[in-house]
Image 1 (cartoon, rainbow, N blue to C red):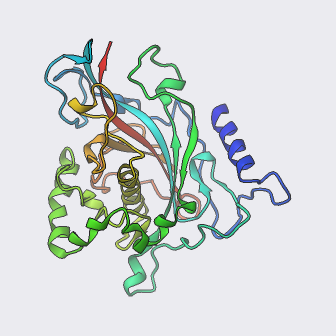
Image 2 (cartoon, rainbow, N blue to C red):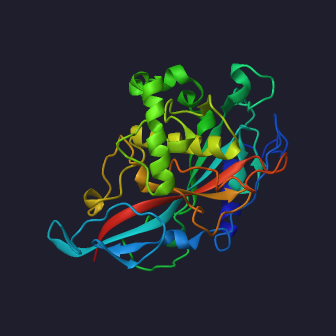
Length: 337
């Protein structure tokens, strides 16, 4: 809790909010809601599992897990080790239709003092027509190496290290709000903007709900819709949970395409991270932290594209709980000493 409060104060200082125009919870359009993530009670600790050595689960779990290297031993250069596979919480994400709304920082809404990011302030409406199912979202991406800074496991070099920090704010990214500019990083989107490609995503929807998404169908976000465009504009918004998970999936893919996020799973990840411009969806799980933390159950941390039918109940509270927060779990295969 102390770390998160320090982070909030640091962000306020960076944005110059300690001057004559202080941060206000109701600054700008829309009231921001949310709460700080309790690192003990708001975490689905069973999402750490399964833990494997080679192809053998030494700590099994009912949650789906991608394939691990078959051999229990590995070699990185001249250094031998044990091929381990596990899941770790590495990032926090705010997903909100309200610009500058930091959901996981207690619902703090910051006014930067200049007009940026406020074009995106729209959600599904009842006016009918094509705009009825349109919504536009922003994402804030935090470094959150929970296991490392809580020192749950000491001296384990495979863990993501560092401290809590804000890594990305979509409001200042021109590619995030303009689908034409977004084509710079996803020109292949034109190949999949057809009914046949979208209909094929039904198979990915079934696979991701039953077990794991189909990585070969990289243009699909399972039951949520299409991965393209890689921005916060959702033209087929059904509800807050579906749309926010779709936007978060697109955002993760965008970071991989920009070579900001790298691969950590499979045999290629045993000796370190590697380039993954086409994101493997099986590498991630998303756990809800706001408005209500999902801390237990089969669908507490589902893979990308899984149906939200079993996740939506109690996850949206009208007026006081429409801003979404997520904890990002990442699959890691590592050649441990």
